[in-house]
Image 1 (cartoon, rainbow, N blue to C red):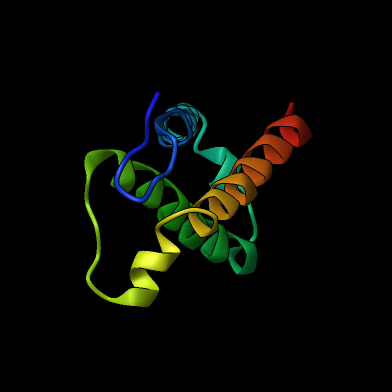
Image 2 (image 1 turned 135 degrees about the vertical axis):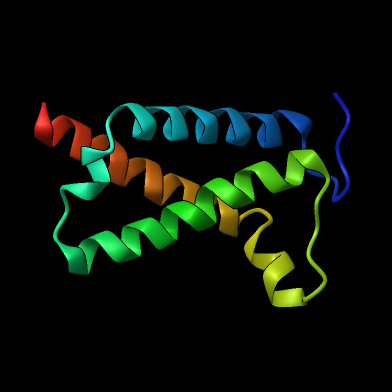
Length: 98
């Protein structure tokens, strides 16, 4: 497989999008994973999730931002780091509550 716009492999963008879709679905089914956190931890988790899930859907859809810092925050490696951190939070919370 060739690559997308910034010479990134297609499988990386599609994998991130599938992971983000899975996380979004799991949070729809189990919102207590985030809502059960205390407020000082809940707000940063919501912000991180908003960034991670939004950025994971932007690249495969071909959306880009104009400002350099915003474009950099929504492309690899930063968006993958945010997605990984949010995934870790959701998985640890899921295991903790199970």
